[in-house]
Image (cartoon, rainbow, N blue to C red; front, side, top):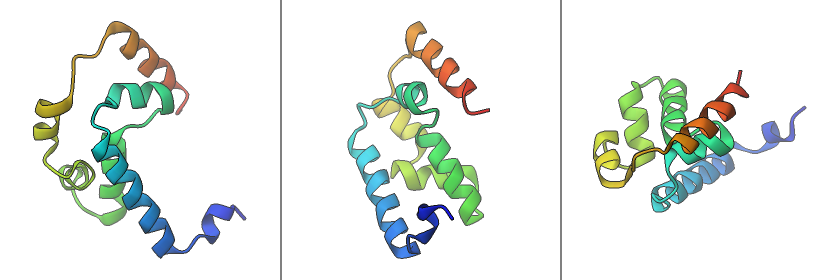
Length: 96
């Protein structure tokens, strides 16, 4: 058994909320960089929330961003460099 499965739902939910609040605070951490390092980003997390909660993707992303994604994007997202895009593509390829 994976020890992750032994963590109670309340503790897991608390850790999840802490992660989401950390990502909200660190708006300087661009999604393309998260994708380049870890193969997932805020959008992925929002999509996973939507899937788990049975809600649409926009609502899942709103929950993660704390606002509509378009608003967050206008306020915080910068243009991705070719190097960032290359790292992201290489990292995402590992997810398969």
